[in-house]
Length: 257
Length: 332
Image 1 (cartoon, chains in turn blue, cyan):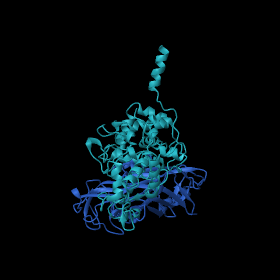
Image 2: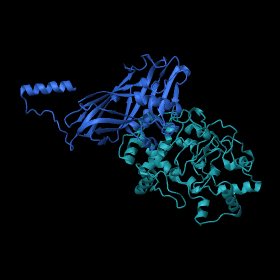
Image 3: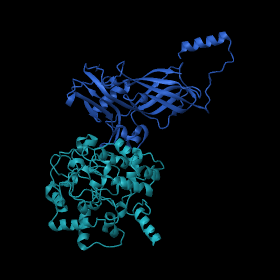
Image 4: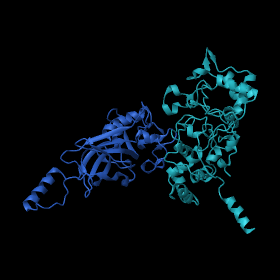
């Protein structure tokens, strides 16, 4: 609901004289908790991501298709205007473009409040990369764990491009690594419009809707030319890709309170 | 008679292991793996052992962890230069010994695995080892009696997941301690070295102990010992990407070294004599050769025939027969 709608509704309520109507709880109660939904809409440069079938073009002019697109979002934190922050415990989310249900994540038990900022890790924090056997979204069976140089793949994009010089013209972008200078852990944060914060209330379930641009791996700080870079599994080339997507992978589309 | 028969029958079925405890040996440093979030129990350990020896986990049901990690070879693979997996596929490197793993921070010859619990995933999934994947293993375990019950006994939940599979295996492997060799008994003043062993021990401290250091007989670092001018296997560089790590491999422990031939990351030497001869005359001036092997313009470590024999006598005191024959770790 945007500002205009709120004003129209308020006006309607006032005109009709329903002054005692308290259907919507306005003031948050710090002792109560509510939930919200994170929605990740997978796109490529503005178009909906279609696995395997759709041709896309990168900033270098190379044509490509995407067969796999998976990424971790973790350590999600919500902040209020007064600077207080709530860290969502055990927030490890794996979005897999081939599994639509993985794009819609419900998060419960958040203290009521008007949150004005979200912050999260693109990937998995260092400690969990070094930890023992994990489960849930971090289950190594999910194909996002390197066994030969143990640690998580933070962002995985696979596909094809006629410009790729790899066998069968494949594209293999497995981005991960936690050791400098090839550390690819990146964080993303965005402020919300103050007039429309994320309103967590016991009786509501707002939605935070993000657009996720797979095309951001290949442009931003350095355009990727598939003839030169079509395979990376950690290392310096993964850093190039991470430095691209840090600013373009996630974009807040809207909050639906 | 009937009662007696029933008794002996149930004894045969009941596991023989009484209690599993993890105790840091007096002459060892503090362990790295402390069974946090994975409390060691008899049920967990026994489940881990069963998994370790179950060939059905591999792609063609021919290979278990125990195939390449044999107890009589201190859990290395005897007579195999490199590990031998499904369909007779030969791997790239020599299967390492398994014991005192709870003191290791990193695993594999290049240190690529950084937590003991996740180490088995590589062998399970490697195309040249067990060539399967965790999803298939978990599905097999969930659908194969008595595994669901064994997981329930060990972890309180009969639904198997990769986490509990790995934690069970770790209870077994982390509990393998070898600290009862003749050397340990000498250190504890329970026995003494022969003259030959004593001479070897002095030589060892003088010439070898800077890398094969302390009670673990390794400083757990990565070094080049000059096997080749240019190593075909990039070794530690595979993990760090650093040119300065090219051809470096983990300094292996020397405990039970008598039993764990062949030696080196590629298993190129099949006897201790050949290993010592390498240090005596075979060290190449490799890129990144460790400085201790190139001193005063001379490559390697000079060793006379007599000294080599003394060193070998000492190295054999590192054999821990109690560990090698410990039924707790045996398949049957």
